[in-house]
Image 1 (cartoon, rainbow, N blue to C red):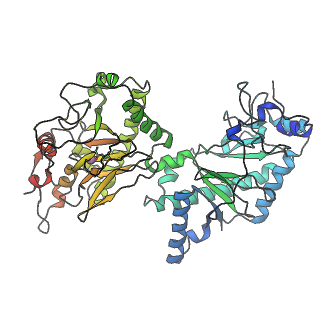
Image 2 (cartoon, rainbow, N blue to C red):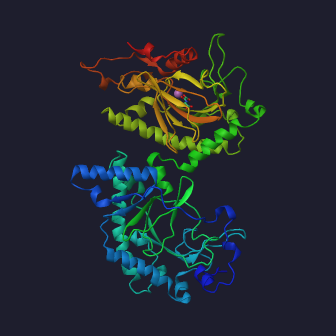
Image 3 (cartoon, rainbow, N blue to C red):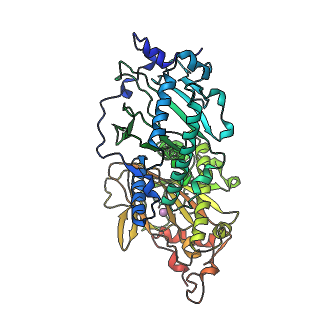
Length: 546
Ligand code: OGA
Ligand code: NI
């Protein structure tokens, strides 16, 4: 049965229906004005022919995207009269008699949530579902040939024509923004446009929030981030209502007349490195959950005397003691080969947490893409053929994951989570703990903290990459320090050339001006020597120098 539209409920309200009442912790409380103003970006200036002006505005865009994830766009080139018309269109449509609006509805179909185009409100799936105080009409506008015109209102009579016009302009603004964002990230201008593809879709959602006598109990829309790429919002020019969560507080986003609010969706966030925040959070949680299991459970994935990593063996463990004077790392780990898939030793892959294998599999697949992308980008940086490193790594290239666990330590001044080292393989991509710092890198003789940026991945070159680049790329020395109160986890993914590959500087990088700096060494031999040196706290790269 079609649920009643919110507009109808609001009109004849005697008592607030309980399905709309938010749980106490979710109820809207008095919001604060933003402590710093919501960023405004002038799109016109982003393409200014005055270099300084353009660069300044690009920096504003960068800051806006990094700190807020959204901004008010002005200078977007859409006339105020068109924007006013679109706003009026929304009002006029929702003010039609219910019977008229219902022509664009489908029984039980509410639009948006189920991806269905229609007029409607929340579909009730379960009794305890809490509903949004919101009616809407949701329509696909691009590609044009996929429009379902039977759901496009004919009343107001200008509806279709104005929406068509607005969509055309919006498509331009959207493409412009995608290009600007690619440039910000030093990507090729069309990177995002082509990732979106020719079949990219654009949907419009007209929202209607009836007045509500108890704004303290209900929400127009419950907290969410948008799932897609970019959202461009035209706000009501007279009534505020949008709030954004910032440093744990809800702040009001006031409407600026004729500005458009640009908001990044989850998929846009993911496009930077191709991995969604939710997957990254899951992987971090996986690490925590695994290490927090009872020791007996974890030991199922261990082998007596085998610690993982140092000897290249896959297992749960910690440092293997080779000698009495060896100084040990304050670190437990789980080290596993993830690629090639057919070489996985699944008996060492935890089955607890129950999602472990599936999430690690998913993460590895995404990481492989990121790794290959990086190898290509690095080849291009060195003016080598794009696939140079990918083919040197070979079809039998390996990818290993290392889950690191650093328990709290009462004397962080005396111990190290990991002693200074550079990574021995090709590339490392590290997912850091999102709450506790600990990684440090040696820079000009000083240890500097590498703070975790939420959902960013840290890329770190290993010795073998230094060798292949003939020293143009450096493998940095880094270490992990401990924390007296908090445990810390990290997840390192190591990209390793085929063990049989001969690692040597690329011929193209050696000429009369620049001599060959490293000798040729088989990848697996390098790792063997590396692991021995590592246990002694020594570096191996110097050994490889000619
Ligand atoms: C590593 C490493 C750093 C960290 O696993 O090789 O350097 O922050 N980890 O855990
Ligand atoms: Ni390392």
